[in-house]
Length: 469
Image 1 (tube, rainbow, N blue to C red):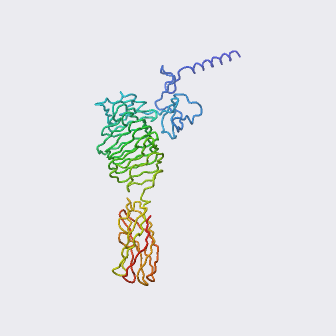
Image 2 (tube, rainbow, N blue to C red):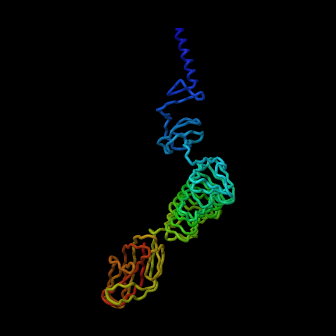
Image 3 (spheres, rainbow, N blue to C red):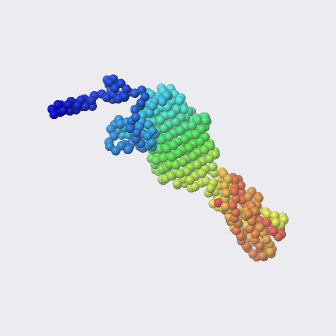
């Protein structure tokens, strides 16, 4: 019995020694690096860590207990991109393989040296801002990407009085907080070059001005950006395409938020909020300086507050469907005319339609004009179908006359619109309705025409109300 007990003690002590010693797994188990607690060696096998599904950088789930700092996992199948992550005590950090032409910027010294106050980035290089970087010099993007990993913590602070981003070159800006307390964030003029400027997932905070972007011959694209406490907003001038997607202007901003000046091909404003206060003289959108635009769109946006929502007037090139603004698009074009002074309509031959005469006045016109009596002209930007409806009453000086009334498009009667009426004597004032559907291209017009089926005696339309919608 004593011998057995002694053997058990020896085995237990030996096990404790193994647990506290270095461990080698794989090839050559008896040869281990002197500095390693655990060494893996193999010429044909790899290291396979725990695989989990991470859905948030700040949530430890699916782990249920407190996660120790430095814990390493491989995320597979979650909403976060697949890859290796480690827990840094507050969030998951993805382990990335360093790229070629990549610079991690931890201080201003990691950027190229400024020349005449301008830092010109090395073309083809990606610069990742790590933490808060203060700069007295401006940056020429030179086609590069400048980005952070977390827009709440990675910041570019410009202390000069000019522009943080300057020159005639564009690039990509992502996941950053941008501040220019005494100057502007942008002062870019691309001089008409066919280049693009992409700004994504950024905060613009506490700047004297967000600045000006002009002469971009490609596309200026802002996506998921937010503005807080800026004294002046951003101006786009003579840019080809401007797309602003999911934008928040907080009520802490002042003066004009978004201003457009000059000529544009496309302006698309989609999603987000423009929160305005009259105390800050806030104006959400200024389009008064636009001299030419092919297509404009402002949709799914909330204009809220006591400030001014729009300065200027939307042209027919715009489609507007936004909370706080009147809907403006070709689909709601319409208008109405009515006779104010009746005039006799004469005929040179029987059964030959002519335009009804009389002085007309218009009402409720939207993308429709009344350039002549008894005429509604469509001035939208695209062809669409309308429903035409009307009603009129007539008198004539003879007995037993038959008349046919029509809607005419561009001076050509629409056969299916025909309505016939008989006037028994000269004391009658009879009425009839008119209606039809018609497709109108921009510039097309409609009128009411009439034919005397039995003679050439005149007719007077005493009342007429004609509308399209």
